[in-house]
Image 1 (cartoon, protein in one colour):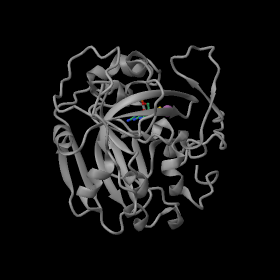
Image 2: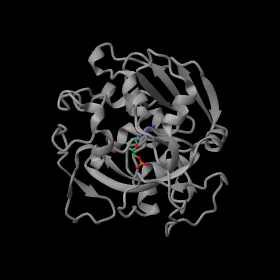
Image 3: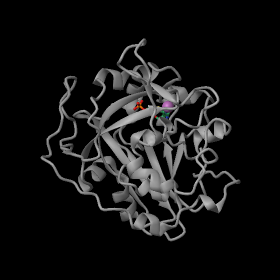
Length: 311
Ligand SMILES: Nc1nc2c(c(=O)[nH]1)N[C@H]1C(S)=C(S)[C@@H](COP(=O)(O)O)O[C@H]1N2
Ligand SMILES: [Mo]
């Protein structure tokens, strides 16, 4: 169940009209999907035939190899190679995503149902981890706002809370108390409604590999990687700002917002630049961009907010 931080201010809440007025997404293009050099396995879900998205970056995606062997997924261990080694133990079928909390249409969905219901796109996004590395991932997924609209959030719903599965029999990292399980994340409702925010079910032409958050994970490209919660089983609408795992674990280092911001340093890592995975250990770091370069689409969400205070 959702947990809350008792201290939060109602100034954090953006009026609902703000996201109701969001601009309409224009999906065009040929529907051609980029098939990477590493796409070798056959698609397991025939429903995955994504269209191209105008929100994709034109940067070169990282290799399938990089994307699936350099991971953070603490449920499977704390080292970068642990998820690739251990995540095959996770049973991802059957899987149920429960949508509940302050909404008029709570429901439980299978991943296949969601994929059949919503337009599936390829979104090539930069992922920028708070540990000052980044990569480019060709996600396959759908906009979270579609699911939110169908759930009919109540007028007092201001946040969306997400939870990962708890299953220590299969998730070996959950046998330790490194984080309090389940892994939790949250977004303000208008952030969740932003067309850039997707639920991903695949990458390259594959269903999502377990180490990347199978069968369904969030991707929020303008925030540090840890906001993009993997293997989601619950999505809840709340009035109060929900507690999130890293904020809970170390509130001095991690806040609720966690927007990529080169001007707000983390106590252990400078956020001014990043190492691009795949360019070699000795490659020059590149400058980190405010909102990971997605400011055009999301800066308006934070107008009037001091991003050093709301980090
Ligand atoms: N459930 C869960 N989700 C998670 C994490 C985690 O440990 N558990 N790690 C986060 C972090 S820190 C990052 S950087 C991204 C990494 O996603 P990737 O392995 O697909 O690149 O997943 C995020 N989602
Ligand atoms: Mo991360």
